Image 1 (tube, helix red, strand yellow):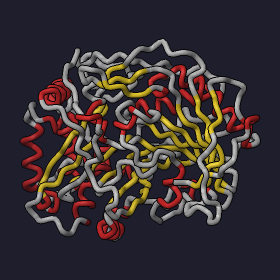
Image 2 (cartoon, helix red, strand yellow):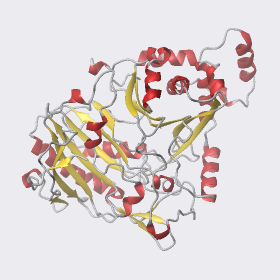
Image 3 (tube, helix red, strand yellow):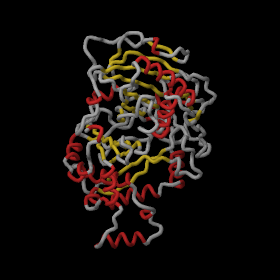
Length: 492
């Protein structure tokens, strides 16, 4: 982790509030600089600035499976503020205290009740806020065109590295770190328990904090947990020993963020929706179009489905060791809020996601085109409505278990996050729009990918890709895939 200087934080950088308490960082060896170049100079404990009126929140059937996942780690780079860094830290601390009063679940702790139900106790226990500096680093050290993500640096932009969500029984449910780089750039990172938030709720809180910081009123969250009725299902952990992640955290990986311009996305979508002009494919397509029960014809294939189809084809080609008859799976995180009937509030705070799986053999993908692969993905998602979601929830309640993240047979792609999340919109803390989004080491394994919106807001998409070194090397030599990859304009 980032090295810590054994000095008291500057007290004049914090607002005069009992909700914010300085803490002494642990002693550290100062003989050698930290490998990442990032040093934590202060740590504060922050509580909501008003007592919570929210009682215990029972973890839902969508929350409980995430107890074996790492905390989510994502954050944003910002341009250099006009204020002194001490004033920036003070502003962030005071606005964070007010934001936690809006979302008190993030300042609580897990408690296991006598009947084995796990609840979020909104007891205002508080969160940790770290201030770090990296005088020898600049934004250019993190955003390097045509290169892997420099994980030796990015991992120390976040506290609580690789903490498992079950540990929320004894550790804060969220932690925060602001890091000042040598060129004035500021990174704000949030680490949030994945059994408390999904991506939608994560970015909802980021927006809430930013809105309060710039003096605006935020949207209020909805904590009601009744969309599946009252569930009696529980996950039991004998002796209070929690689960571990279900993948090898030390497996060698390369990580890279690929940018797909709006023009590239439009080209992929046009190809995916092009009707065949003749031959056997045209005959098959004609039969499908005449079948009203076929979910593949429920509207056009979306831009993101088209992009995912190209990724599925190219990554499968790059996995040279897969047998032709091996089954490949493309898993996509699905937001259930608008798919359920009646729909859940868009500001519901908690997990409301499921994993939609689309399968095909290696040989099927090898002999098929983008339109076919995109049609498979489209069919899965078109069919993922209220009935499918409730069947999956009922199956989990009949056999509760933690969500098995990972890729044991090397044939899975897991697409998380979303290019629709408000990462750049609504996250101005008062000194400019974010410059880029980056994540930590949490929940990363062979085939794990995350979708981010392009900064330009023009429909471009960034995909964070984690693959073994040999697979990444092969993907970078896939001419068809690289045809659609470009450098974002702010890095040119």
